[in-house]
Image 1: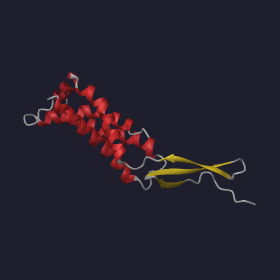
Image 2: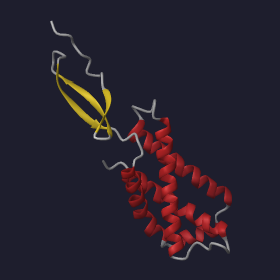
Image 3: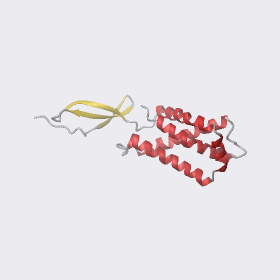
Image 4: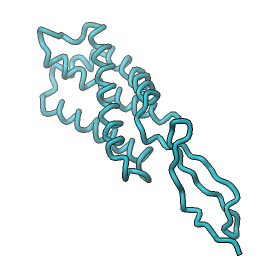
Length: 168
């Protein structure tokens, strides 16, 4: 009599430099007849960085060109700016957790934090470059206004970067 293997027994292996979950496929009797490979996007690699840069640019460009975003930077209090930063990080964290780490967070907490912080930071840089290029960051004369405008536009840009990072 052959030994039955529980189909919930999955393993994680690196294949061609990327992590994959190997899921056994069993017949009705419980005998494994094949295996399925599911790519795991647990590591924040160069490809992910490029996807975040492109995705954040997609939303940063139209939002950074709106006068409403520029004026909001003038009128928004510091407390609200800090809350926007925290809200951005919470949204990124929740989305990343449920799309990448829900099943496999254990052992990859550092990668999770790296992906969340990296996504926000890259989006921040993209927005800073765009707003500087269109001369809406008054560096040297009003740095705080420049930072507020960057944070405001980074909120949607980071969401775009996070979404594009899910593309395999």
